[in-house]
Image (cartoon, rainbow over all chains, first blue to last red; front, side):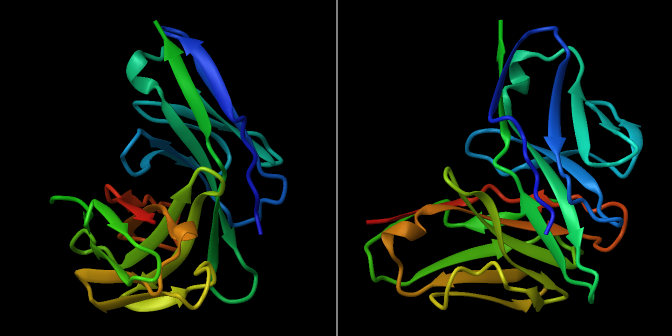
Length: 114
Length: 116
């Protein structure tokens, strides 16, 4: 099974760029990497997904090196409202059959200070 | 669309009682997931359904837990009997696609369960 490892917490200031790295050494060939954001008392919310190289959308960028053993979520110019927990999720496709295992890490608690 | 709907939002019960959590997925979504979230273990996938059929229940902690999806718009997660260690936030999520390159899950607001 794929396993993800992230820093437990990070601190930043408004206007800075924040990079959160996730390690997933056992990522399988068909796995995608997905990041979610979670605010207190809410369910996680999808941010971005990628397979390799770089993906960018209106809120974040995702950098994935060639070996895909890690990924970095980049949040440009964070604001106080970006204070949340960020989860890295790697889909784990078993070689036998179509069962898919989803292993969520414990998340990174990001605190953005004024 | 109202999004994924879960009820109740909060549940406080006593050890040994039966607890039933309910979920209404987003219309048209073929997949439904049940998660449990605790501080110690983070988000754990308990079970997921495809077209109302349970596909993978390997995350269900023990026989006290059961889940059903009688139709495309309703699912339940039942704990009987409940124990204090079951206290957690339970999330339901749905997605329209799986096995593709885009598998965004849409989460409900969760049910906070406290077992005394």
